[in-house]
Length: 109
Image 1 (cartoon, rainbow, N blue to C red):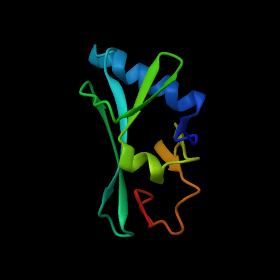
Image 2: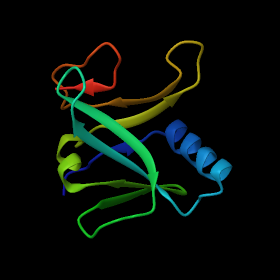
Image 3: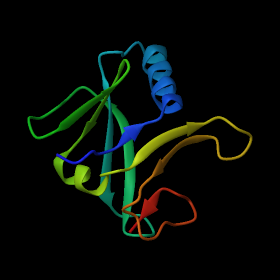
C-alpha cells in the first residue's frame, strides 16, 4: 500500500485539541475527496465514528485518521498541516497529485 495522507505535528495537535473540546476522543478525522468545487474535486474533513472494512486507518499520536478507498488514491503522498497565523490560518492539504488548485485552496484537479 502506498503512503496516503500524513498529518504534521501541528495538524495532529490541533485535531486532538478539537476532539477533546468536543468530548469525542473516540472519533477519527475523516479526510475525503469528493467531486465538485471549482477545480473538479474538493476536500472534505469531519469527525466520524462510522468506519467500514474498506476504510484505511492511520494513527498520528493520539489521532486516528480514516480515508475511504476512493479518496485514498487521490491523497497518496499528501499532507495535512495546520497553521495559526494572521494570514493562512486553518488546515491546509498539500497534495502532490493536484495538477491545479483554485484560489480558495479547497478544490483541485
